[in-house]
Image 1 (cartoon, one colour):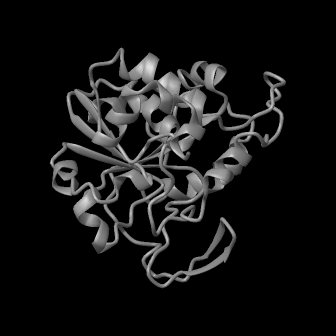
Image 2 (image 1 turned 90 degrees about the vertical axis):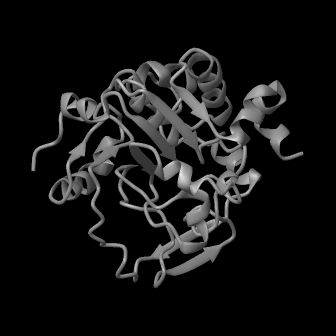
Length: 258
């Protein structure tokens, strides 16, 4: 099945109220599941299995998945998990992992122009045999990357969705590590020190720029705050993000965990 064009994808999103749901711990206890599911389109990032005890918080509806080389990073019933410090490895035993959920689209979280994109081709080709699958554009991703270093998956989804003519984008569970990960997610074992460590450790050298390639949560947070949230009135956020966006102290990752 060929990859989906931006034209088709944008036509699907045109004029719609969209909820984007990530796996951050800040969603726990929010009891916003019905509100999320009331949106025209619900988009999730690397997470499509919602355990019963999370449904009140994050709903059940899923129309679009943004992912890379895994269809889901959830720990599913039946999976075996090996835990070594903050590193979790999932042994995919669950028969739920290869489910037939009725996704409208799967989107990559990185564009084809990324130097490491070859890592994801096999998985994306596999997705495209079952679902309408789309690879995000090089722009505006690379313009944003030039100011933030490599976007994390949730931020990449925000960048991409805002290029569509949607009416509203409600964001929850993506907080740039102002909280960590919710339970039952692959990276639930992460600590603040985990984020500090990998935000200072490069994943290689970007051959296009010669720069060390790494995630920088603070740069992403500030870009989102000043160049997206405060400029684009389509963006709505949950109460947790309203709080951290309102106080400049939270622009520094460390101030969230003192």
